[in-house]
Length: 122
Image (cartoon, rainbow, N blue to C red; front, side, top):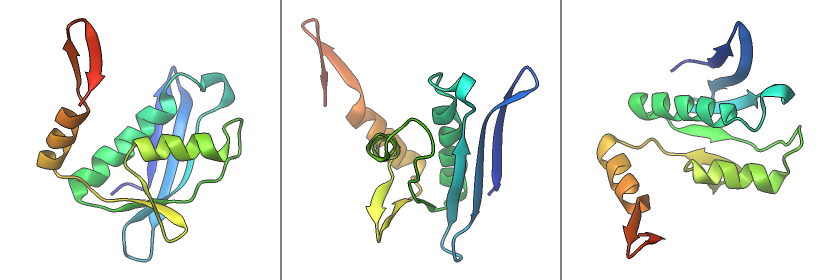
């Protein structure tokens, strides 16, 4: 699995993420950075999704510690990572890789269903 992910736009780095080996158990995300002028445009989500896709493909467990260094609070960052499948584990956060069958089941479960003009979650 790669240890560095970068998203470019017009020759500018608009997001970067670094990972390293976590004691032979998987990879730990050590940094996700989006420059201030590119925040709020889903670039952080895009790079995290790239990491997750590669981890799932290579069956690699992901780990991280939450350290807020910008305007987002710890709670906001935690909620963001939880939405991507990270779970609290021994003082840090861990995400188990998902196979294609598990991904499809989760997508069906989270899919919105429109019934009588209302949208509900199943």
